[in-house]
Each structure stands twice: as C-alpha cells, then as structure tokens.
Length: 316
Image (cartoon, rainbow, N blue to C red; front, side):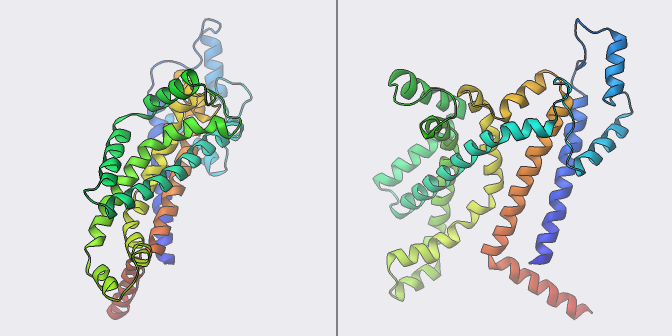
C-alpha cells in the first residue's frame, strides 16, 4: 500500500507541475499588456515590467515562479499593488469552499439514495422519476437552474433571500443549483452499478444463506456498487468547485470566482497563475485522496501489490 501511495504522490506532483507550466505559457500568450493604460507611458510600463520581472526570458520567469511556489509564495497582484495572492485566497476561498462542500455533500446523499432506489425498483414509478430527474438535471446548466431558482423562490415567492451568503437560508438556493448536475451524475452511475451487482453470483449466495434484504444491500450491493463513484470523485469535485464561479456572481457571493474572472479580464498574470495553482493543488490533492481511498476500499489493489512483490522475489 505504501508503494501505491508513493506512486500516486509522484504522479500528483508531476500533474501539478504540468498544469502550472501550461497555464504559465497560456497566460503569457494573452493579447495585451497588463500595464497599458492612458495614465502610463512606455517608460513607466517598462519600469513596471522590470519591477515584476516580466522583462526577463520566459524560462527565467517560470523558474522563479516555480521556486516561489514551492516556498508557498503565490506572488503579488499586478492590478492590486501590495496585495498578495495568498491574502486574496485567504479572504475569499472559504466562501467558495463552503459552497462547494455543501453542494457536494447534498449531491452525494441525494444521488446515492436516488440511484439505489431506482435500482431496487427497475421499471417502476420510482425508477422513471429518478431517470427523468437525472436527465433533466444533466441537461440544465447550473447558471440556468441558479437563475430559475432565484427568480421563483426569491423574486416571485419571496421565500428565500436572493443574494449574499450570511445564514443557512441564503445557502439553500446556490447549494441546490450547484448540486443538481452532480446529483444526476451520481444517481445514474449508482443505478447502473447496482444493476450490475444485483445479478452477481455472490448476491444469489447471500440470499440463499437467508440474509435479509437490508443486509444484502448494505454489506454487498452498496460496498461493491460504490467503487465506480469513488473512481470519478476527483472529476466530480473539480466540476463542483469550478461551477461555483458563475453561481458566486449570480448570488453575490464574494468567493474566488469574482477575483479569478476579473483577473483574466485585467491580464493580472500573477492572480490568474496563483489561483489556478491553488485550485490545481486542491484538485490534485482531492484526486490523490480518492486514489488512496480506492486502494483502501478495493482489496484487489493490495492483492496486485502482493503478487508483484512475490514475482520480484521469484526473479531474484
């Protein structure tokens, strides 16, 4: 297991370095000059580029940035003098994280329950309702569902607040809008996975032993059906977190999305790079955690490692 974790850690570091390098190059390719304005002339712009190190060759800029990144320094904003990227993230990330985590928990709970209910009653009314809901939620983008929820429940019915992030009542609409797509994805995947498991021989054996329906579902069906869900948790986390960008704007939540989008329009290289690197580290860590969890849940990984060690010993 230790070798498996070490291998995944090396892959995670390489993935993050590749992501930072690609974004570093793409940001430099954006048209325009971050220091160009009516108030600055060519001499001032040249001094500002020299101050931020943008006059150096791109490979030197990359090496400096990666060195600072290893030290935990994400840089200083080009558009907000004296404002560090670390401070901007510390000020805004907790809003984005809270929205994303709440939506993810709701999606996991609702998606797993819907998928299991649909699989247990194939061809029934529950199955059709779940399939219809899944197709609907997948088809409607989160910014559309967010706007509709805001219009219906906040503007028309006035049951819930339309904007801000202050109390649990403010959280209901954005969390619901962000979780719809993930609920549909998990429900469809869980239903399909459980249908494959239900007809396996070990399920028939468990029934023959006289185990109750609850014991069969809990001990055998859920444990084996949830493995595909764990496999795709990394992309699911990525989809949920990136989905907060638009919803933060719709619901007036002061998260990282506002800074991220504005920094792209302003050609704020360091802000784009810093927030991308931070999101990259967060998502790579989430994928690494999923890989480790998968290794714990699925004993076949441990068995494969044992076989590999035995083969190495035989060769020696």
